[in-house]
Structures are given as structure tokens and as C-alpha cells.
Image 1 (spheres, rainbow, N blue to C red):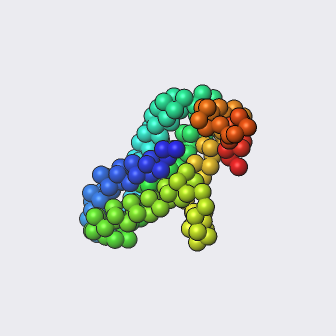
Image 2: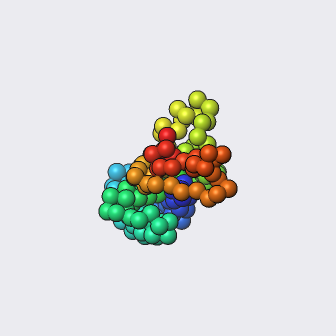
Image 3: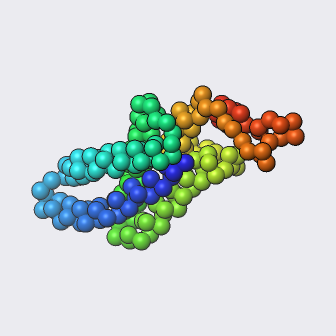
Length: 182
């Protein structure tokens, strides 16, 4: 499932716009034009609609390109998962930019490392990571996006296999989406 890379797109969106806006805020804040709350409110008001548009485009392309047979529910889950994942990448990148100050390359590296870990733990690369990483995984929105999509896309699905994939008794290893979820 391609929802891990969506978070990286959010990081790239943030890196492209946030540092310059942060620098302008620091200048204007130093002469007491407005505070941090006003800055974060206006930044969110500008960026959230762009995230929603990007997530909408991604969801439509993903649903039809992957031939999910999208229903309104599947498309809605896909869209909300994309918005949350995109926002996660942007928010973590913003946090890294704020914490690490002017060192943009370090912020990008830290954010990329964290998003890579979240992507690997999302449930498509590693089904049984070590216990410590399983606990860490519970704060990953990517995990929840993949879980939601897997549930809505695999429930009620009948699976087929090729002759080379069949067991000795002629049956397929997985016959339903429910078995794949287990």
C-alpha cells in the first residue's frame, strides 16, 4: 500500500514553504506584529486546503489505478487516510524544523528517518517487529491508515491463485480477504 510515501510528500511540501514563512514570522514577531498562535493559524489555513486537494487527487488515482472497485465508503476511507498521512509528514517536518532551528538538512534527515520507520512498521513490510517497535508503532498514523484501508478493501473479497501457488490438495493458500487480514 502506497500510503507511506504520501507522508514524505507532506514533508516535501513543508520543506518547500515552511522555512521561509518561519523566517518571516520571526522577523515580524520581533517587532510585535503578531504572535505564534496567529502564525500557526494562518499557516494551517493556507496549507490544509492544499493538503486536502492533494489527498483528493491521490485518493482518486489510487482507487482507480489499483482497481479497488471504489465505493463511497472505500473512497472516503482512502481520502481521510491520505489527508491524515499527508498531514503527519508535514507536521513532523514542521516540528523538526522548529526544534532543529536553521539546520534544514538535519530536519529533513530526522523526519525522513522517522517516516521511514513508520512506513516499515505500517504492516506491509514487517508483520511481527520486536515488541519495542510494536509499541512505537501505535503512534504512527501510517499504521492506522494502512489498517483502515486493508480492512475496507479486503473485507468480502474473494481471492484466486495461479496453479503454481496452489497447495498439494489443489486449494489456494488464501481464499478470502478475511483470511488475508488474519
